[in-house]
Image 1 (tube, helix red, strand yellow):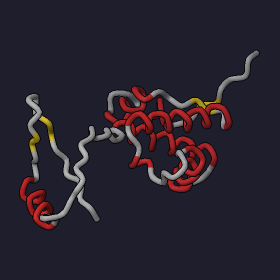
Image 2: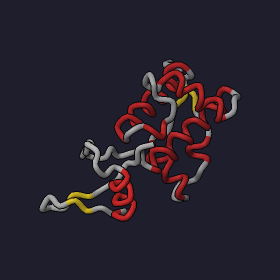
Image 3: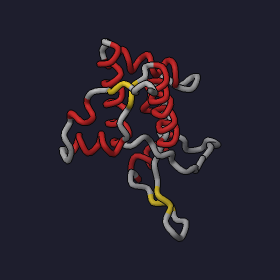
Image 4: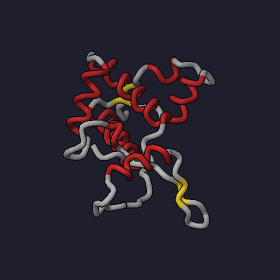
Length: 144
């Protein structure tokens, strides 16, 4: 497998290679060959807060439908991940945010749940609000 080397580019354009020894060893394996060097901005992966919020949402859905969170997660991935992507860990922050929005839309539209916003959930995780305020899904009330 071809390694990927993560580098920083300084303000002057110099390459800063944190793992220079590993890079040098790989480079020596390729000595005398014509090679490609691709520099691109590294995509920012989903954040820990995004992931924590998503798993709270999955647990709320699992509680609502009487299923286990692992199966709910698997079914949501099959339904809402783009073709060819099998893991939410491979998504960028923007892609993961869109995925979570689809999951929330599904819960609110099809299951008639009210999903608490991320700030309320993260406050509960951090202990700054009471967990029961975000732990149980509430049904939308029918218009009178």
